[in-house]
Image 1: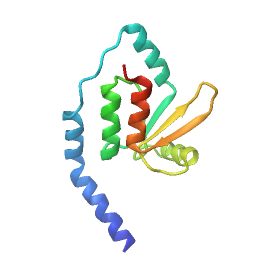
Image 2: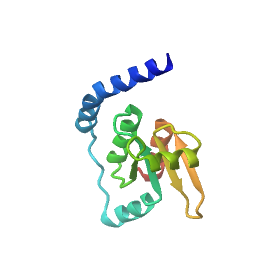
Image 3: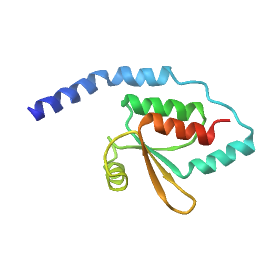
Image 4: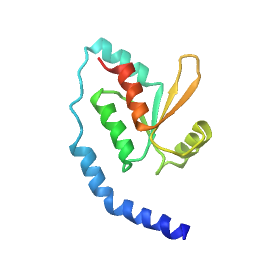
Amino acid sequence: MKVVIRLFFIVLRRLLMPFMLLYAALSKPKAITRDPARQAEVDQACGQLTLFQFNTCPFCIKVKKEVHRLALPITLANVQRDQEARQTLIAGGGKGQVPCLRITGDDGQVQWLYESGDINAYLQARFAP
């Protein structure tokens, strides 16, 4: 029974994938603009962030929209296509749930932030003008 349920969701995801990707592309908000010096600071800070995601996850789309709106060059790791990224997520964060934002502090400490709402709140608090 578990195999049948899993197969059902795989087929459902494959059928809905083009619509999810189209929605993600068409619903991107307008990106904010910053002065070049401030954008350079933001770019440097984003070097310490990695978003573990996959393209058709609705919660990942929600986070990526906020990343686009805030004009953040965050590294994306697709756990569906990159098994090394998936293993990194599981080993570091403790579970394979996406979206997950890996935040590396200046002291080298790594924080794993799950849940799209929490990730968006963190990004807004840190990078919103």
